[in-house]
Every structure is written in structure tokens, then in C-alpha cells.
Image (tube, rainbow, N blue to C red):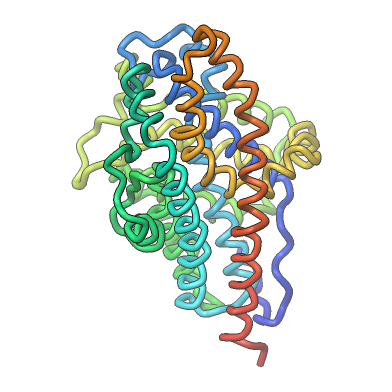
Length: 385
């Protein structure tokens, strides 16, 4: 079902607060996963041939970073489809605004990371040697480049390299931008009769070539297109929700431990596949996003103020936590004042409030002003006629 476009002068489309809450919870899970990557790598199949028992239980969902990132991509597809179908701005303008919406906070995060690394590089080097965490090697240490390199990395480089050694979560920016632009282009005409077919074709094509991040974008847009149909029972949605959570455990490294489950991830394709997430994690994210909109119990949790607050600061939380892990918390890890178990417990207790405060400050100083400024700029460039 296609929504009728409205005039550009219309107000911003109503947000789905359930998805705001889901995005916030997903962002928090990402922060947990990186804490485990840094200080408890033996828990993860990606870093250990024999991961701890907890990696084989549903608790693994609390530190599986691939699953919430896949949820982000599905939610982005939904939100971009919603915005593009309701507000009839040109696709080129929408893509330009989307770039700066991602690039300005990304640039601010690399500058923020550079400043922290400037003062804590020695602590990061010590943590690498003491903990043996391969994840900590994804960030610059004493070989920190110049300030302008950090500025350029967040503003430009991550959108064509898909990588950042200042803030490793920025690998998603390239996928976010390209996926968003594709959805904007498909919604660029007020009446595009073949839009639904293009979305389905794109979903199938990206599945076949194993570019699962973009599969998630197409799926999110399709969820928007079918938002008013197929209202199944609460029981059916609960089954889908539970199955989606189960699939969310099946990361590519985890599947390598169970070859019978990974057969679809190793099928030959014409181009290199997406190694950042498995097919099953992607399908789990799609099922989860679809089901949470219809489950009353889950909706009530995601619409409560804690989840809504997390949703508000989710982008700031996502962009600020890794630099803190690689600097402030790396320093705590090698302080040697307390035995390691007590030190780790103290770090875990301090971690959540510290990253929430950092995420809130970043949201107020960078993210929200960027959103407001770009909204006004778009209306100025393409005023009501």
C-alpha cells in the first residue's frame, strides 16, 4: 500500500515512538557488546575458538553487536520510506541532507575521539598488552594522526572507506548513507507505480549477493509499505518475536561453530558477501521490527520513558561510547589498584552512567542542533509553493 505524498510545507511525519524505544535499547546493547569485546573477549566466538558458555545462551543477545546494528538498518529503511513518502522533497536534496545528518555527528565523534586519545594513548597501549584484546587494536594508539586527519575522517573518509581507526563504529556510516539514498530514490516520484516491485527486487537481489545490510534497508521500507495489512493475532506476533530473538544470536562467527546452520552464509556469489552480519541475524532483525509494532506488552515497554530516553540519545550513545572504552576505561583496566575481578566490576558499574551522560551531552550539543539546522535548511532550499 502506497501512502499519498503531501506538500513539502507539511509538518514532519509523526514519529513511531515504539521504534524510538527499540532503537534506544538496540544502541544500549551495542555499548554492552563493545565492553565485552574490550575487556571480556573470551566470551565471543569472533575472538575465541572456544567461547565461554554464556555465548551459547540467550544472554548472548546482550552483547551481540551485529543484531542491534541490523535492527538499526531495518529501522532506517522504515523511517526513510516514511519521510520520503510523506514529504515530497527532491531525492537529491534528501540525499544531501542525509549526508550532513550523518557526517556532522560522525565528524564531531572523530574529533572527540582524537582529543581523548591525545591524553590516554599510553593507557590504551598498556591495555592492549595486558588484556590481549584484539578489538582494542582497531583504534589508534601512540601513532595518532593529526587533528585535521580526524576531522577529515569523520566528515569524508568513512563514507567511501567504510572504516575509522578513531571511532570504529563509524563503519556503519557508508552503509547508512548508501542505503538511505537508494530508498530516497525509489520514493522520489510522487506516483511511482513500480516502487513496491523495486523494493522486493532489491531485497531479493541483496540477499542473493549477501549484502545483508542493504537487505535490511529494503525490508524496512517494505514493512512501512505493508504497515496497515496482515494484522495477525498477538500469539502469532509473539512467536515471530521469540523466533527473531533466537535468530539474533546467530552471528557469522557463532555459525562457524555449527556448520549445518551456516550453509547459506557460504554459498558462492558473484561479488564478495557481507561479513559484518549473518543472514540469520538480518532475518531476525526484520522479524523483530515487524513484530514489536503489534505486541502490546513489548510496545508498552518500548514506549515507557527509559526506552524513549535511550531512543532520544541513541545516536549520541552510539557515537561516543567507543572512544571512552579505548581511553578512560582502558586506563581503569590497567590501573592495578584493585584485583582484576573487582576492577572489572567497578568498570561495569561506572560504564552505564558515564556513557549515558556522554550520549546525552552529545545529543544536546551536536545531534539535536544538527537535526534542527538541517530541517530549516531543507525548508529554505525547497520552500512551500
